Structure formats: C-alpha cells, structure tokens
Image 1: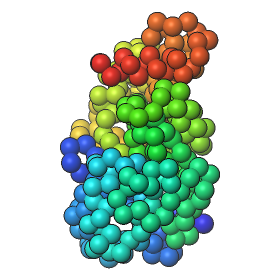
Image 2: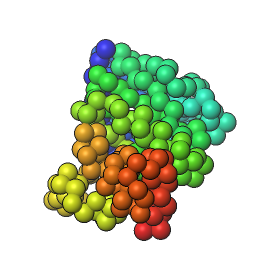
Image 3: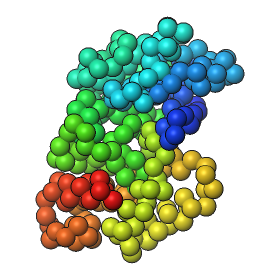
Image 4: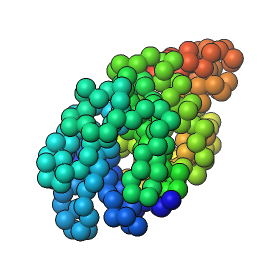
Length: 255
C-alpha cells in the first residue's frame, strides 16, 4: 500500500477541501469539493489528473463542485450508498466496512450518521489520515441535522478507536470557537489548555489536521463517558454517555 500526498485547500469562509495524490499510480482524489476552480488550479499547477471525487455527505458546501469537476476531468464521484440520491453525479457507492482504493492507497469506510443520516468517513491507515467531514471537528463535532444523539455518539465512539497517531482532517476551521465552549466544560483539563495555547499561537494558520490522541484528551464530545464532562452538564457520573453527549450538544447549540 502507498502513502498519500495531502494538499489542504481553504475555501469559502471556513471550509477545507483536500487533494489526495497517490504518487505510485498517479491517482488523485479530492475530498468534499465545495467549489471547483481552486481544485482545478492546483491540479494544473501540480500536473495531476483528478481520478476521484470523495464525498462524506450531501451538503452543498461539500458537494458543490462535484459536477463541474466531473465534467472537466472525467473523475468518478464516490459517496455513501445510503445517501446516493443526494450526492450529485455519484458513480461509486460505499457502505460500512468496505474498502476504497485510490491507486494503491486503501481507505476503510465508516458510516458515521448524526450530522446527516448518510454521512461516511474515509480512513487511510498507511497515511495515518482520517477524512471525517462534519462528524468530528477539532475540539468539537457536527450539529445533528438529521441524526440522533445516540447515532452521533456511536459514530464518534467508532472514530475515537482509531490509532492515536491518526491525523484528523475535518472539513471546517472551527477550532477556536469550539475551544471556547470546551474550556467552559472542562476548565482544568490540561490537555485542552495546551491545545488552546497551540491554537492561539497559530496566528490565523490552519489548526487542522489535529492528532486523534489530542482530540481524545481534549475534545469534550469524545469524552461524554468521563465523570468530569457528565458533572459539567449537570448529570451524575455513570450517566449513559449518549445522554451526556445529548446535553453537551444541546448546550453547544445555544452557546
């Protein structure tokens, strides 16, 4: 298997698009293209040919460039089988546990409902890279537009079990805002305070990707099964984690 070259493309107000290039085969994928032109510009500059468009979910700020890119390059559109009717131009449909090959680089596919009902994530173990869309953010998680707290907690728990050295390539730059809420939840969490200090010194540079090890230690939405987070939202330690998560998400929605 091969390691990917990852190019991060900031677009719109806070979105990230990711170009994935597998140098052995020349295959190149793009994850969640909100718009097409910045992707095409980098492809031209690098001399890469786009072969695949990988979507995590159907929202327009993740699929808005699908058809233009497909028409310009002939790339195949890849997305969730359960959400195929809402992914523009979809060619390849994937479900939980299936493997997607980008050249010689293999991704394991996870179904991660919660933000939307058909959300998926792609984990490339050889690259230590997780492309998780709007399920997991640095120090946060996505809003529950279509799923339940139980679904989202199960999705986050699934991603939390990946190796700690995994780089979390989420789709938005929300870390500073998420951190303000996280600090309110766990004021004495040293891992969180360290992460907040790191972000404060980035001077506008991307805080993404983050390490999964750091997210496990600092992200309250991955810590709904810990006593400190339960107490912070007014619940007893030992409360069902999905219930703690639900209260945490409710409070973040009005924060």
